[in-house]
Image 1 (tube, rainbow, N blue to C red):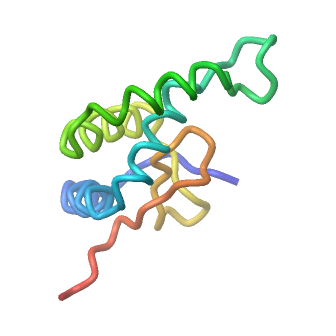
Image 2 (cartoon, rainbow, N blue to C red):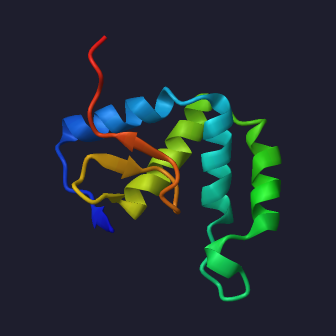
Length: 105
C-alpha cells in the first residue's frame, strides 16, 4: 500500500539530500526508470524497456546534480511514499526509496 506525500518542508529537503547521497549508478538507474515509465497497454507493467536502455545510455552524459534534480521533479509529481509516510518513492515503481529523515552525522 502506498500513500501520498504530506510532509514538512524540512522532510522534503531531507529526502532530496538523501537522494543526492545515492551512488551515481543508482541515480542513472532511477533516472532511466522514470524515462521508461509508460502506462500504455502495449508495455507490460508500465515499463518500456527500449526507453530504459536509451535513457540509461544518455544518463552517462548528465551530471549527478542534474540527475538528482530531474528525479526529484518526477518524484514530487508522483508524490508517493510507503504506508506510514516515512519513506519516499523516488522511482515510479517503488523499488528505489529514500527516507524523509536525515541521519545525524
